[in-house]
Every structure is written in C-alpha cells, then in structure tokens.
Image (cartoon, rainbow, N blue to C red; front, side):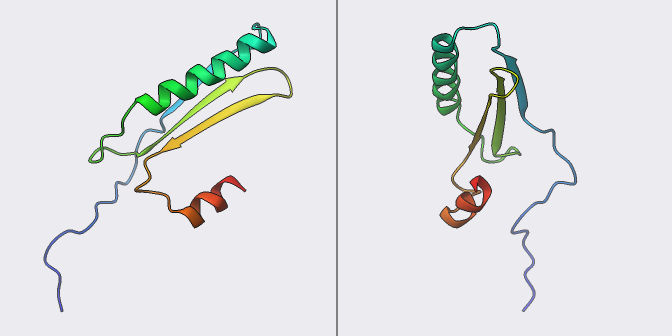
Length: 88
C-alpha cells in the first residue's frame, strides 16, 4: 500500500531555544527564588504544536560548580521511557 499523505515533517535545521542567565551575584535564597520563578514562567509558556522545536532550555549559572538547567518540553515529544533515559 502507498500512503499519499504526509504523516510527519522533519526539518533539516531549527534554532535551539536556549537562554542563559548569570545568577552568581545573588544570595543562595535569591538564587533559589530565581530558579522557582524561572520554572514557573516556563510552565506558563505554552508550546505551539505546529512550530518546532517543542522543547526549551534555560541555563542558570549559580557559581563555579553549581548550575541549573531547565529542560521543558511538550509531552507529545517525550514518553515516560524516553524521559527517564534523557534525565539519567
């Protein structure tokens, strides 16, 4: 059987949704509050399902040996098994 309808589009390239913020000058309490705020803001930003990519990365620099990477994605691109593999 021949399928004559596109089922999936794969783009040859897409811009990486990456942002960085230097939080080194903040106190530990301010850093923790900033992480919470960044996570709250990313949860409020919906993904547009017909616009790639369906994930975002935000890097918060906390110090020489401590950083936070916030990875957010739409559930449509990661199942439970893939998510556990990605985060391990």
